[in-house]
Length: 408
Ligand code: PLP
Image: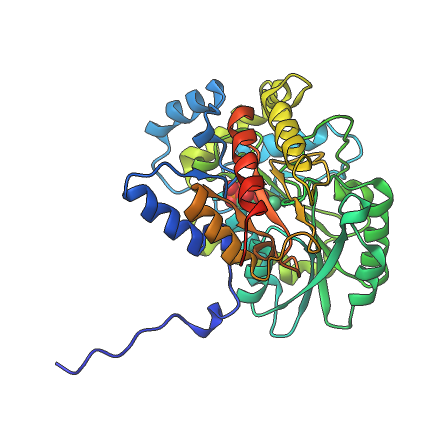
C-alpha cells in the first residue's frame, strides 16, 4: 500500500469562521468532561435553558412522523408553505407572494448557504453588517464572494451607518444583508434606517437579504418593520424560522420568502430551486411543525411582555453589565443577546478570543468574543440572555470581578 497522502481541508474554507462554536467551546467541553459545571452562554439555544417547545408543535410533529417518512417536494410540503403565506398575509404591509415563492430549509442556516452558493461568483461583494451573525460572512466566503462589512453605530443604538454603507458600495456589490432584530446587538432598526438601506439598494440595483429570525422577539415599545414592506419594489429574500420564536432550534426548520420583481432574477431563482432539489428536501417531520406554529397561539408573547421571562432576563443582564465600571451596553430591544463594550481606556484587552478563553478557564462561563461577529476591535463580547435572571446576574458579576484583575 502506498503511504497515506496528507488530507487537509479545502482552500475554500480559508475564510470560513464560526467562533460561536470555536476553540473556546472545545475547551469548555473538555472542562465539562473533567467534571466541571460550565455555563455556556455561547449559543442562542432556548431548549437548554428550560424553554419548552409549545405543545401543539410537538404534538403535530409526532402525529406526522408515521406518515412523513418519504421525501417531499424540494421547496417543502404545501401545507407548510401555505402556512408561511398565511403568516405574512396577516401583515397588510408585506408584499403578497404565493407558495411557490417559499422555500423551506433545515433551519435558516441551510437556506443562507444555498442562497449564497446560488448568487455569488468569484469577487462579487456582499455588504454585511459589523457586528453580524457570522454565518453570513462565512457563507459569502464559501460561495466565492467577498464580504464587505458596513458598520453599525454603537453611539446610535447600533443602527446601521448609512454613510458607511454608501461609501462601501462598488460596481461588484451584488447584495446587502440586513439582520433585524440584530444578533449580536439586539438592535431593532428604525423605519428611517430601513428606508435609507432600501434607497441605497434601489440606486445600486442590489439584492436585499433580510434575516428576520427574531422578528417576534421584541422588548419595550420596539416595533419590527419587515424589510420587504419597506422595499416592495425590490427583490427581497426574507429568512425566518422556528428556532427562536417557537423554541424548537433542534427541529431545524426555517423558511425563505421571495418578494418583489423577479423577472430580472430568473436565473438566480432557478439556481436556488436547483440547490433545493440537490438536497432533495428538508427534514419532513419538522416541516409538519410549521403549520402548527404559524397558525396557533403566539406563545412567545407571554415571554417578552413586561413580566415575561425573556424580558426579565434581558433587564437582569443589561443592568448588571452597566453596573461594572468601564462597561457599557446598549439596551437590547430584541433578540436573545447583549453585546457590551469594555472601555479600552480602562481594560487592556488586546486579543478578545484570549480574553474569552481566560475567562472560561477562570470562571467557567463561556462567552463569544466580539471579533467572532466581525466586529473590528477587541472590545466587546456577546452574552446569551437565555438563562434565568439570577444565573445571568451571577455570571455578569463574575465577569466584572474577572475584568477588575485581568492582565493579558
Ligand atoms: N440568523 C440569525 C441572525 C441567527 O441568530 C441564527 C441562529 O442563531 C440563524 C440565522 C440560524 O438559525 P436556524 O436555527 O434557523 O438555522
